[in-house]
Amino acid sequence: EVQLVQSGTAVKEPGESLKISCKASGYSFSNFWVLWVRQVPGKGLEWMGIIYPGDSETRYSPSFQGHVTISADKSVNTAYLQWRSLKASDTATYYCARHAGIGVPADFWGQGTLVTVPS
Amino acid sequence: QTVVTQEPSLTVSPGGTVTLTCASTTGAVTGGHYPNWFQQKPGQAPRALIYSTSNKHSWTPARFSGSLLGGKAVLILSDVQPEDEADYYCLLCYGGDCVFGGGTKLTVL
Image (spheres, rainbow over the protein chains, first blue to last red):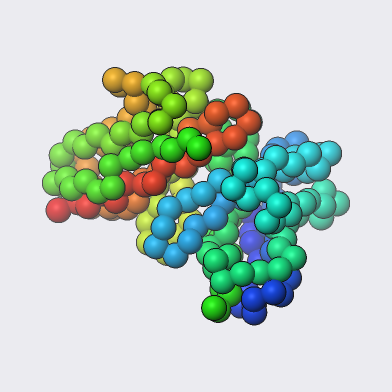
């Protein structure tokens, strides 16, 4: 059974750093891209970027390039999303999903991680 | 910047049929955009319904179908059930980058 289990809720102060995780199981982690998606409270879904754990090739959406870092550790089947300096505007729920290739960009999803940065 | 547009809200009666559309500011949506559709209920993660225009995942109910119509991607819900009340998002891919639509809030009333 394919599963993506994300780390728990995070509450951070502006300027702090944060790294959230997405642990995959039930499939060959190295051979599928992983997608990260942002959802601001009450708003829609936003495509952030993808990573191929096999070689760590990463592609960012222009809106998120330079603001976050996506990484992966295939030895522990885990993808990460990282901020160096959080802002209040980063408050959102972040989802990871398995990208199963061309035409199937997100078949299985994690449960989401809520990140709160008070203003 | 590419924008993908959906109806903000739609209402349908139980047992009825409703069509949700997904358009692109770059022009007609084609199979090369690999349209995907997702359902999201309050407090839950999105769930994939349709991939590559019209293909269903193994868990997708038969009453959901996808296609292209009039330059847009469409999601058709037939015999709508109360549990279909949710937000629906389309996703279009432009080369290596993909863009979600703004979502349609479907009310079953």
